[in-house]
Image 1 (cartoon, rainbow, N blue to C red):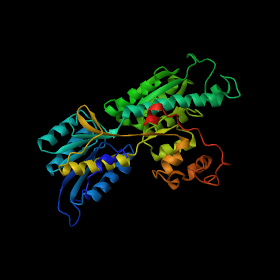
Image 2 (cartoon, helix red, strand yellow):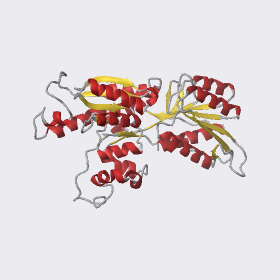
Image 3 (cartoon, rainbow, N blue to C red):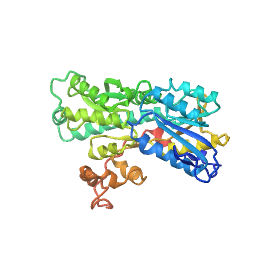
Amino acid sequence: MVGAVFLVGVVGCASGGADDGAGAGAAHEGTIGLLLPESQTARYEASDHPTFVSVTDRRCPGCTVLYANAGQDAAAQLQQAESMLAQGADVLVLGAVDTVAAAGIVTQAERLGAQVIAYDRFLDGADYYVSYDYEFIGFLLGSALVGGIADRAADTTQGTTQGTTRDTARGRTDDRTDDGRPGVLLVHGSATEPNALAIAAGTRRALEGEDIDVLAEYYTPDWSPDKATEWTEAMLTRYPGQVDGILAANDGIAGGAIAAAKAAGLDPVPVTTGQDGELAAVQRILAGDQYMTVYKATDQQAQTAAELAVRLLRGEDPRATAVIDGVPTQLLAPRAVGAADVEHVIVDGRVYSTDEICVPAYVAACERAGLIGPDADADADAAPAPAPVPVPAREAAR
């Protein structure tokens, strides 16, 4: 529904596919360039790119779509944008590697009469901006972390004395020197990326006033899972037995942090968040290794951007739902997903099928969750579902 505003008034229009030129038999209407920042995050190649091309193909058979992925290289992205503009791009949909460096792309496009849609990452001077509320995503992550730590403490202390079963399971010892409050690590995204900064701000807002110690925090260069693993390993050594939770800013970072925790022998691993709704994250959630992810309907985001690009190409003036720093904006709503949410959000929402999720290594986890096996269609006789991820009142209001 949030993307519908850009669908109104769009008449049959589509691209001939990435780099294929206009569709056969259709008069050429113009050229749209899609520039994505990197491929370490699975969503860009698995969802954003193919969805954008497919929607443009349906909506504008006379359009040509040019595509490039910068591989996290700002200089390469500048060259890609210059090439597209030289080929006559009328609209650039730009997911910037570096928003400061990308200002030069916006300036060049304006000089040549092309319009720019900032995609996923805000750009000063862009004509439109399509993204998610990343500070709210950070708030979801922080709120879920607080709730997960509380749930873990309640579960592991039931029927036992604080400092015995719980501490032994987590590798804690009697010589802890902290104040006894839960300790967390904050593993943010890249410090050069505005969305990472917004997520971090939302996270801090969620943790403000909570009875939790932030032991250390780190801005992960290039959102690299390998660098997140290395840093987490070092922090687990520095704070032995004190890490109850890890706020990972996306699912790639979460995977790296969980790998570090497992390598350190922690069982269970600390409560760990994530973002992007990647398939591997969904599997880790079902297996109990990752507490939650924030699912963003990236196909909806790509569809919205594609519809908007076509309308701009045709000289229309689409109505936006917000204005950020003078840029007309469309913000889409994210969704917190825990184990109890996988079936109705991920499977029923056709994000991933049970065949994709429940590969041999995760069959047992899927059966426990009731996704497959004899309990998949069980009713009142089925075991109670896991508790859903805590949803802040702000999301419920949405």
